[in-house]
Length: 74
Image 1 (cartoon, rainbow, N blue to C red):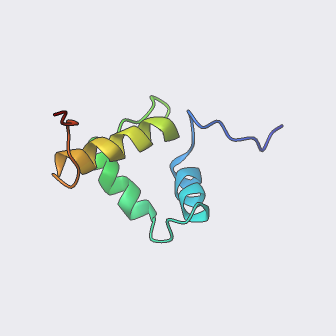
Image 2 (image 1 turned 90 degrees about the vertical axis):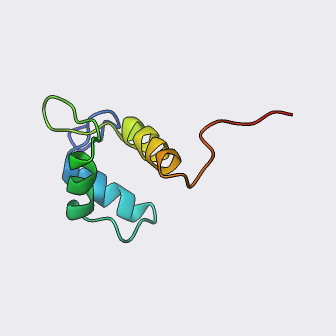
């Protein structure tokens, strides 16, 4: 299984390709690099954990005020 992908350790190129195939047509290496510069966690070997990337994106959306950071109960 040489060509298998490990979701917790994807190369930046694989992340971009995977997200494009999943429907994020505007994903580019430049956008990924911008996310990395903004604090996206990267593994020591330069790979990216897709699960952590997803969680990071959700936190960023919440931080920008586009979503409620806390659920409110009545």
